[in-house]
Image (cartoon, rainbow, N blue to C red; front, side, top):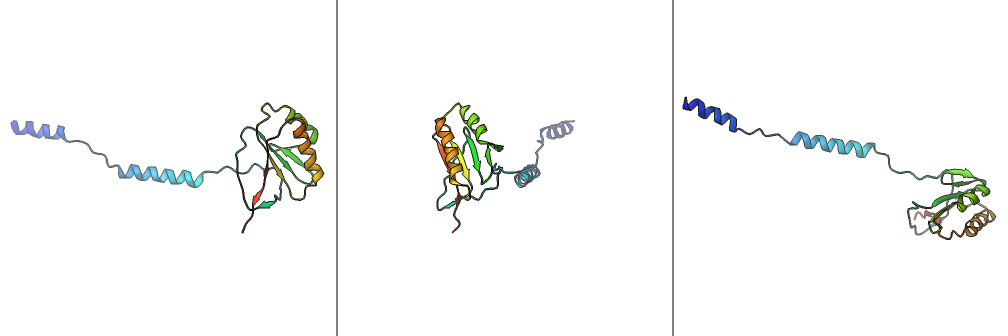
Length: 138
């Protein structure tokens, strides 16, 4: 009887141990899967622009302001093709006049069109304008 009792207690005292190796393998497989299948943030350009090249590039996020894209024939604001009148309305509706405005201009855009957009922004007292360019490949 005492032997049976000590045998029963030995069975009770045995700890159940889990092997963590398969769990870690699954976690790493999931991590690799999500890294491979994720889609990274793409540029929001609507118009196909050929930007001028410079030797230095400074990127700043424009989270609060808006984007203006100019091509030879079209203009887009925040991914929506607009006219100069709509640009005037949108710039008049801007609450924070100090918010940055990113300006992407095609190389072949006439100066008159650029000056017209800058005039609209200046009339609305929007002075924080950032010109976007491409980094020159050396």
